[in-house]
Image (cartoon, rainbow over all chains, first blue to last red; front, side, top):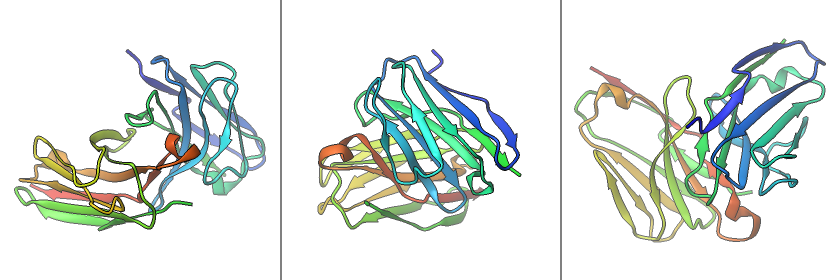
Length: 111
Length: 114
C-alpha cells in the first residue's frame, strides 16, 4: 500500500524555469492538499481540492497553479520559479478531513 | 484566516523527562490533531480530538481538547530518544470550506538528550 507518493523527491531549478510536482494517492480519497514547509513557518496550505475537477486557493497560492484531472492525482505547477519558492512541498490526502495522510515531501531549491 | 499559536518553538530535554506543548487559537475548531514529523519524512498523525474537554491517550502521549475549543495541549511522559522530531498541532474549522482544511501550528522541535 503506497499511500501518498510524491515525485520527484528532490529538484534544483534556475529562476524562471517551470516544473510540475506530482502527487498520487491510492486510497480513493476525495480531498487532496499541497502544503509548503519553511523553517519556523510550519505547514502552509497552497492549494487544495475537494474532488476530481475542483481546486481552491489556500493560504499562500501566489505563484502556483494546480490541477486535479483524475481523482488520484493532484499536480502542483510553478510557471516561473522564484528563489522564494525554495521549500519542502508536501502533498496530503484524506477521505474525512480528519485522518490526513502526508507524502514524504519534495525538496525544491531554486537558484 | 485562522491562525494557531504553538509553544514552545523548541525544547531540549533529558531522556526520561516529561514534555508539554500547547496550541491556542483565536478561532473555534471542531477538531484538534497532533502530528509528529521525523527528519526527511512527512507528518504522521499521533492523536485526534473530536469534542471539547476530551482527554485522549496513545501510549506515553496524552492530549486534551480545550473546553473553549480554542486550545489543545500534548504531553509526552518519560521521553525517549526516538521522541525527537517536530510536533505540530492542527485544527479543523467549524464551518463551510474550512471543514476540509487543516490549519497547522508552526511546530515544536523536540530534542532528547540520552
